[in-house]
Structures are given as C-alpha cells and as structure tokens.
Image (cartoon, rainbow, N blue to C red; front, side, top):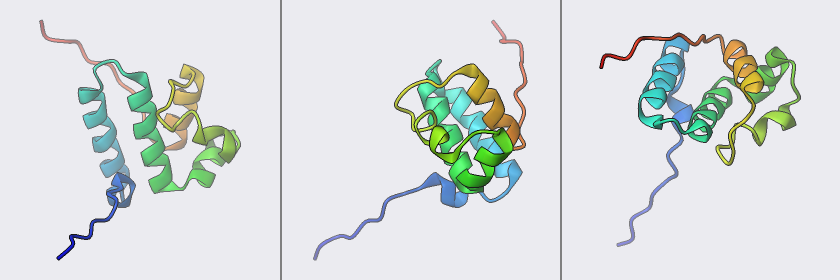
Length: 98
C-alpha cells in the first residue's frame, strides 16, 4: 500500500495577526542571521494575508515581491520594512542576555 503525502504550507495556518507575529518571531529565533530565511518567512506570511493586498499596501507590484520574498536571496532592508508594515507587524529590539 502506497503512502500519499501532501505538501505542507505554513501559510494555511497563519489566520490571525497574532499567528503571523508568532510565526515571524519564531523564525527570527532560528534564523541565525540568515536574511534569506527571514525573507522567505515574510513571503509565507504575505501569501497567508494575500500577496496582492500586501503588495498594494507596501506600494510595490505583486510581481516585484515574489522574488525578494522567495528565500533565494536577501531583499533590501527597505523592502523588508515596507512588507512588515504592510503585514501590520512591527520590528522591535531586545537586549541579548550575555
């Protein structure tokens, strides 16, 4: 008997702004400085919210968001800030306990 699997998509489980914020926070914790990983996480959140709406709110074209948020490369910080604002999220800083 063959086992059938389906592709897991985190975007399907990001239903509320709180879900999206928690997902991004978890990604920050495990990214280990990998900007492309964070970009892909933002892409997942943008798909959950609707890429067209996020692009409109960020003042960018939908097509111009797919590549920077694919995780293949690190987008500009300007793009990151626009997308985070369009998603209704904000960045914050916290001191590292050493």
